[in-house]
Image 1 (cartoon, one colour):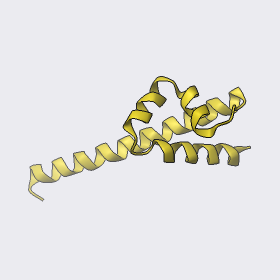
Image 2: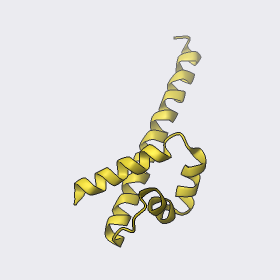
Image 3: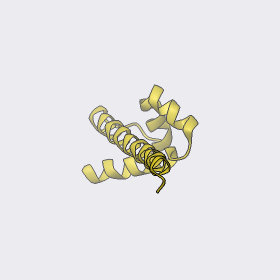
Image 4: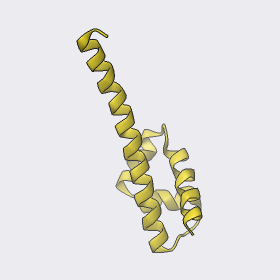
Amino acid sequence: MSENISKYVEQIVSKLTGNNSLIEQFKKNPIKIVTDILGIKLDDNILQAVIKAVQGKLNIEDVAKNAGGILAKLKSLFGK
């Protein structure tokens, strides 16, 4: 079961990555976007697990991007 969830999450994240419009749609209506991307209807428990995992992955990616920007600013501030 969990390997299916992982597979679904990876598939959704790969579609969302770099597509800000789709990410915004996902934030507004994650159930619709997950269903559209996968093309199947999931059990509610699995659907919620997939949505939470995707949200977690997207937040990690956002944090990583923001951290890179912060590091660059700090380096320029201290001249290194």
